[in-house]
Image (cartoon, rainbow, N blue to C red; front, side):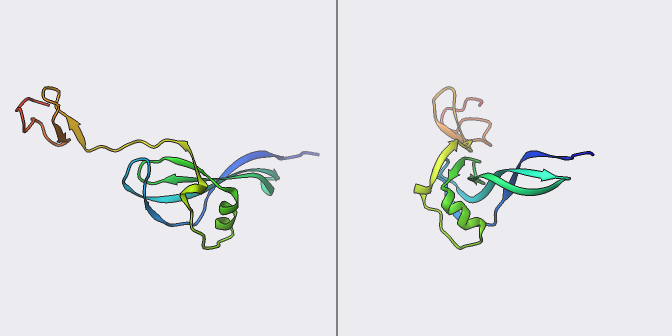
Length: 124
C-alpha cells in the first residue's frame, strides 16, 4: 500500500481593501491581508488546517505587520471589519521610497531627475 500525504505550509490572500496613509513611509498604501497556515494533505487533497496566522502587508513600502487573530478570523469569514492601528504589530520594516537626493558639495536636497545642483551648480 502506498501512502501519499504530508504536512505543508500555505498562504492565502484574503479579500480586504482599505487605503491608508502608511505609518512607515508616509505614502498612500493599501492593506493586503494574508493568512498563513499549516495543513495536512492526503493524496494531494488538503484535509485540515491549523496554526493560522494573519499578516497585513502594505502595498506602498511592503512593510509587514502581524494582525490580531480575532480580526483576521472575522476578515476570513467575510465580515466587514475595520483594522485599527492597535491590532497591528510590526514584523518587518518597509523600504522607504525617496525621490530626493542630496548634493555632495552643499547638502541641498534635489529631486532625483536633476543632473546638476541648482544651488551651487556642481554635478550630482
